[in-house]
Length: 354
Image (tube, rainbow, N blue to C red):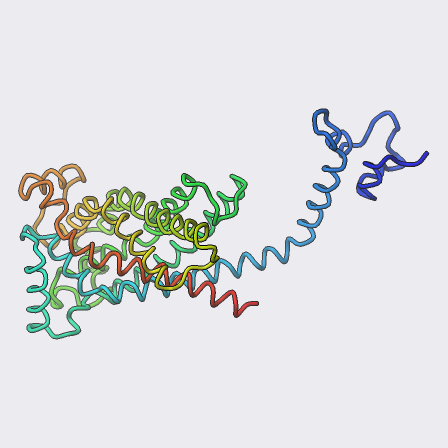
């Protein structure tokens, strides 16, 4: 008897073993011929063939995954280093205002920059940047790499490619990436904040900060302010990555071009930074106060008490949003440079690999 069209389409994958009893179909046929599947055997054969190909190609896929992770780490590290170095003087000025009770204004900020340059020299504007690099390079590398991995995982879970993730998973991927990076590099962030607000005589280098904190304040101090950091990172990283990815997706849809130009990436990144930092800024102020409490004379307290103290002494808007206008200047620049550098490095590395 000649086989039916469905059986013939399956080829060897659907051939029953001679040892299998005729009254009991093998597990493959039992699963593939469920009622309500229409042409179930044919679809099952294709699915089995795809599964077999996936198994055979797994070593190649694993090697490709390792390359992608390495590429993301390298691109993220360079992106973070360039972005933070570009805005380091503005960042240092913002931190000084955040941890003091001095009223912030653009005029006062630029006056502080000018007098720092006159009294301590041009390079003093980048004081603490070495600690920033020690923190930012692993932070950015982990964040961007984790974001790519979370996009892949969520894409598989929801049945989408990473670039076409729906809004909520896209927001979740960014939030998880930021939380992962912050958790692994937080002590370096605290060290960088300490170096930014103290004179050279107090802390001569990064290792000196670690040694003095561990001796005088205890190792637990290295994670003081971690909770507001994570609470701030979730909306910041989530909204930043979400905005950037959404703008790129809309650009592909309406322009017909697969890749935006570099200046368009900068604009998308600037918008992402503006939205992300505005949403999380009050927690950033609280975090800085808690990180530097040991050297600025502020009492070491909880998030709620620190926030209440700021509001009581300086006001809700002036206190919790102190320096935000400077963040609107430096944030979009830094995030724009960061996202653009990461994307262009990824494209370059893919071309070199191929």
